[in-house]
Length: 271
Image (cartoon, rainbow, N blue to C red):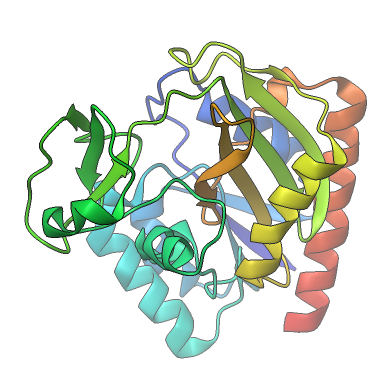
């Protein structure tokens, strides 16, 4: 089965090397027997029409930078039934930031979020609030202020949490693979291996179950609140960077094996 692998090898991600990670992954997948062609996200729609059996979306950068091309690709794939991995049914970042509002309303352990300054009273009272565009990514447009403003429905407003650290949990399908954390909150991408507790994993699996993706790679980002509990920061289900260079070789091997199994299962179901 020929597969189209969507990536932006040259994207200048701060503290991350997108190209290196996708060179590693494609080399390992090719060694596992997959036939792969790589393309930039802006070319995905046109190249999908050439007859690939499926499309794998990996480190393609924030959709904000190629929104029109992504929407055209997504619409075309849905129209003709092209299998896309991760599947296009994701309910989290793949669909925008509305899920943070929905999870807040449903009482999930997430940083409380509203999208209207008039609803500020619904959030905990704190000295500073984080305000960012609802259609943003990678902290683009993020500001901290005591008096949030912005058009209703176009901004996300959250209390600024004085957290101890951020931690990310990485999954293939519903299977946990590894966790990494940033001991220094000011250095988000200076990550170290993290040994999660059963409570930590139960927290992360709550959001994997909520998202209901049958196949795919997901990253659950959380912060350790002053009270000691974990709060969801982001559920990345479109193109999560994996920081594979920071985990031991045996963990890399296990991740590639899990991804290989997931892709075979996904492709057999799509055939």
